[in-house]
Length: 506
Image 1 (tube, one colour):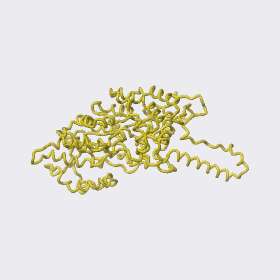
Image 2 (image 1 turned 90 degrees about the vertical axis):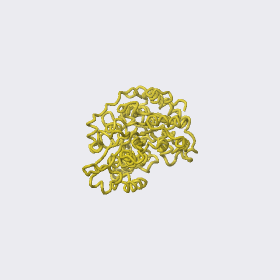
Image 3 (image 1 turned 30 degrees about the vertical axis):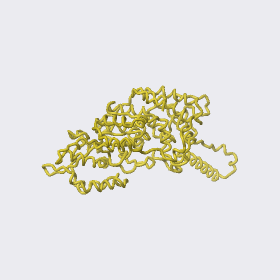
Image 4 (image 1 turned 60 degrees about the horizontal axis):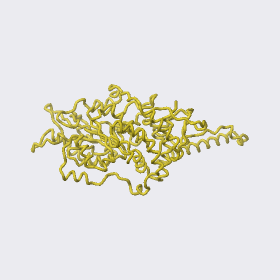
């Protein structure tokens, strides 16, 4: 039964932003005397006009007209015959938002997801699990192991790295790594050569526009923390499937070896600690590796390329299933922000033209209609993960429904393995929050000079001046979004046992 109902049967199916109405032949009375060829030509032209109009509305101002199928071709979000209400034509209309919130509240007490079997996870990517061992080196904090060199690797281990192909800065890093590659090899008694390989000790997984970039750059100042040589490799969610940009569809897959190369500089430091040095300083053994991709928490859209959606509309595997399978002791850092402000910041950052508070207001209304349509016949989780719905919404509303993603991460990782931070706390008391991160990662204290440099440096990735000039969102937009997010935030505050995650006083 749909959660939402509207007595007006003339309003059914998807909202008008996705509606294509057929023009019946019998309605074209004046054309009956025209030759059959002209009738067909007229209908073809009319159909093309409707397709172009629908294409323009769907893609809004992103990349021109969608005259070709998107990589995630739009599937029907709900049954068109269901009776729904889609009257959120303006954020000043509060009747439907209250019904939507009531529907959300009734569906938020969902059962934990059923975890896939480990053998099924492994079977989806046998190469990944053949490269990464089940056990890592002892007496080292980071998950590292020795990999025997093959003949091809000895010549140039970075020649085909796809990150280097697409990143000039990483190509420069690879030039340095080549020069010092041989001196960092381990030589066994049987004349075999091995290189040290490492995975991340911890992951900063999201969310977008919640301060992950700033945290990344501050943690770089800690001598025990070594990140990937480029922020946001997006390997677990996109690159390993061959996704560079979602709009481009599947391209060449980035193998796990390319991802591991991003930790090669960190491995060099750790290797020095394993081999020891003349000063007897073995502090490199305590170096921890890290990775920061703001897509890791939420983005599982690649599965819509690889599998038909299940009956419940949810992806068969999530990124955390694979991370946990290869390193069950990983530490996870999540940064969250008032979802209302996050959405507005996301809109300003990722849209390049025609931005205004009125445009944001309209996009919010359209996206709420789409979410309402999906939720009428589907679970909250399936709507949050629904690729078609996500691509149809003109603002990324689903990314602020934090509780759904967090609960799914808690199905595979223990609560003490996940540190959830709030951007508002981070901005108000940076020193205290950073110390929470240090304690969580179990790294040593900084010198006074380094800590002063870490806490006093300006914020990264702040709002552009042109976007600041637009001012805050409309009060009516904010009120509507606050009401929509309230049940999600309430459940999040309960799970985290922290009333601050209600964001009622942001």
